[in-house]
Length: 165
Image (cartoon, rainbow, N blue to C red):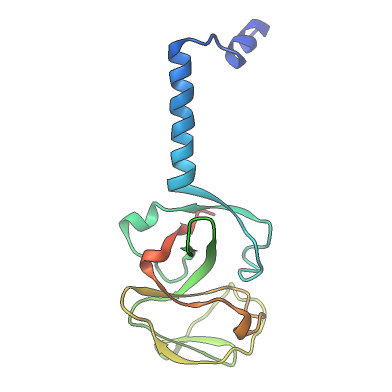
């Protein structure tokens, strides 16, 4: 491409067709990045070592149009509005019994292997049953004292989407 080709590519003539394309691309990008694949900056340490403060990822809403959250999914949970979302891992589904003993996760009385948890913890939590229409979520960073973590049962209707990568 010669110099005039670059100039034409970067600064096209402003015709009705060009303006229409620009408007359609802008509206499409806005809808895609506000409704389908929401950009997210991680703020907090509850998902370390998997995600660190300042990391950037996307919340993809498409998977949960077709199926509910699954165990192991890292999900975004909508709080009072769309500006604040918690990032947590699904560890149990409706009807499961969840407990922590000496820092280890037990689901339905069986020890669950959690390779993403790299630091020992001393969490203890009596068994509790996950209500219908809910999932049980918790962060990967178990060195945070259990009283300082935000975790527990969440209505599936509050789960916005899952981490894209």
